[in-house]
Amino acid sequence: MSRRFVTFGALGVAGGVGYYLYSAGGDPKVAQHQAEHDAARVSSAIKGDLPGKEKEAKTEAKTLGAQAGAKYDQAISDAKSEVSKVDSKLDSYRQDAGKKIDQYSKDVRDTANSAVEKFDKTVEDKASKAKSGLSGWFGGGK
Image 1: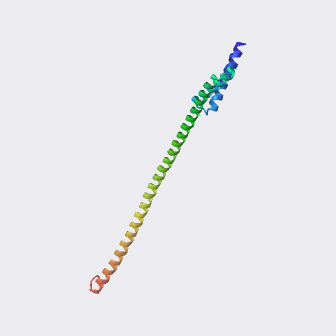
Image 2: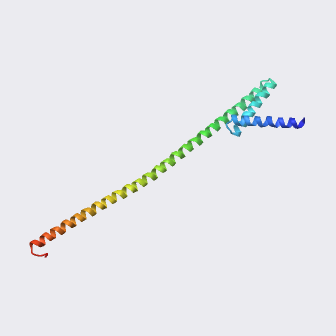
Image 3: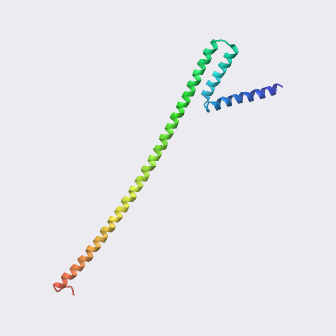
C-alpha cells in the first residue's frame, strides 16, 4: 500500500511540475512563481483570513513580474534573431553585388579590348592599302 501511495504521489508531483512548466512556457522561474502564487491562494482559502490575501497579492505580483520579464526577454531574443537574419541577408546581397560588378567590369573590359583590336586591324589594313597605293604612284613597290 505504501509503495502504491509513493508511486501515485510521485506521479501527481510530476504532473504538477509539468502543468506549471507548460503554463509558464517552459520558463522554470515563472513556473515557480505561479506555483507559489497558487499555494498562497490555497493557503488563504483554507485559513479564510485577510492576512493571507496580502501574501497572495505579493505572490501574484511576483508571478506577473516574472511573466512580464520572460515575455520581455523573449521579445529581445526575437528582435536579435531578426536583426541577425537581416544582417546575413545584407551580407549576402553585398557579396552578390560584388560578384556582379566584377563580372560586368570583365565583360566591359573584354568588349572594349575586342573593339580596340578590331579598330587596330582596320587601321592597319587601311594603312597597308594606302602605303601600297602611294608606292604605285611613285614607281616603287614592284
